[in-house]
Amino acid sequence: MDVAMRAETVTLTGHGGDRIEGYLAQPVGDGQPPAGGVVVIHHMPGYDDWSKEVTRRFAFHGYPALCPNLYSREAPGASPDDAAATARAAGGVPDERLVGDVAGAMETLKALEVCNGKAATIGYCSGGRQSLLAACSLPLDAAVDCYGAFVLNTPPEGAPLSVRPLGDRVKDLHCPLLGLFGADDQFPAPDEVAQLEKLLAGAGKDFEFHSYEGAGHAFFCTDRPAYRPEAAVDGWNKIWDFFGRHLS
Image (cartoon, rainbow, N blue to C red; front, side, top):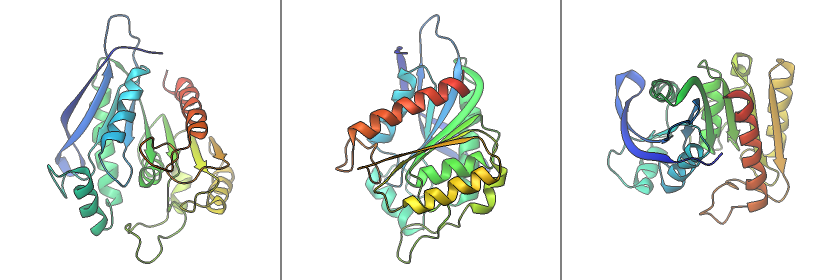
């Protein structure tokens, strides 16, 4: 589905009532059927051009989408690189705050006329873990984890993240989950993906995982050497099918 869209920087209410920045893209035009909203959770490099490009891509396919700037508090007005460096120095985004910011983004999307009242998350890298966290914490209709690191394993010493494993939260998953991973990735490595798959299956959750040979971390990112076109194209097709089933 290819549609006209409008994209803009907005302010939304996040965790604790904080006002944070976000990038909103939504389909426009008469006859456009409402669809579920997508909260795009950016990767650890931050609220950057690629994350905004992804947000626009959803609107282009008929889904209103909003990418909250998770680093709004640490580095307001800073460049994506500087904001990401500040966030890394702080150990990343606290889980409780992430959930509150995603909840605020969900409410912003659901208030749009082009939204049908459903909502999903998709996240990349650290955002993949956060997408799963949100799906275990909020009444989402679908969630996508793109190579989320440290879902089950603790970050190694010196890593720019200070987060706890989410294995004990899997039982709380509220919605169908799509996982897309690189077979050559180390964070998460294939054995961690297999462990997560086993936990989800044991808890009776609705999920589907796909791993791509020859792809490592960040294989979706078109502006990085890690980009793998074949894996990314198939991954996007999996996403469109998944959201088509759960956000219509």
